[in-house]
Length: 240
Image (cartoon, rainbow, N blue to C red; front, side, top):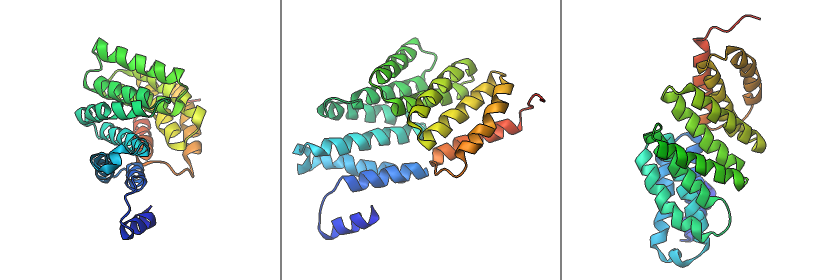
């Protein structure tokens, strides 16, 4: 990407794929500030003559999706909602697919973070996840369920966290993307601890460690794994 960026600058070419890709890499590494800058650069291209070029919609929609996820991971809920609303008309231009549904799910997750106990936000989240399930989008489903489980744990709602983390783990295992599996599984173990299912946590932790070993995982996945490891240190497991 850096080499392509240099070539594009020399040729004065405008290629939205480059800042979009650099933003995705930055988000993977946990550099959310740089990720936001790169995604903003892609979105700014809509103000240029490229706005009438259909392929730009895919790049901008992808950038907005990742930008929204970066804001969610930084707990910038209102910013995430704003990006979702910008994403909606672009996603609709792409026709069939799960982009519109994912944008709605991301917005529902942000609203759930702001007011998890509000019936309206819970209903919107349930509707959004069901739509993603119907569209067979397991990776996107895993992201939403994991985000919900993380919120539940932070709000001390262990039973709901367990349900969301269980669903996230099931969806993540369909795609088997290492970072998604590690995040969902680590949250599941934390939910098991929170619901006093220590035997299950004791059984799952070594399996998660074995899975994660040697994998190239995202900064968020590594942080979630470390948080779970810390929770386990303060937990007394039943003896075998």
